[in-house]
Image (cartoon, rainbow, N blue to C red; front, side, top):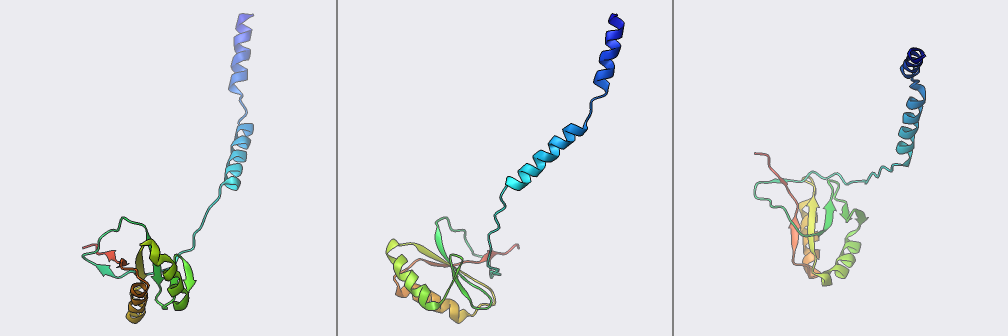
Length: 135
């Protein structure tokens, strides 16, 4: 009798059905795919000019971006020159620094105009973003 039990046990263990296991794995995969959130943040395409002497900044800056089409963005939001001036008036009292990210093809006159607006509003810390050369 003991011999028969061993044979029956071996038969039961050798015939494990993997279909329910695969079903559970697929259900878990679908659950995690549906519950995970993918956050896509829109960006502004800017090709920064290259500079050999550029340095990394450690403090948090207010970012003003100028695209190749001379559009102005302040912290990712499209603004006009007048809106930029009024926003910079509000920021001037907090002694925050400004980082200007201007595309290589952006008008130099536009960059200088924004720099002048920053200085008129009392912001003395104005930086221009560049990318470091790979040389």
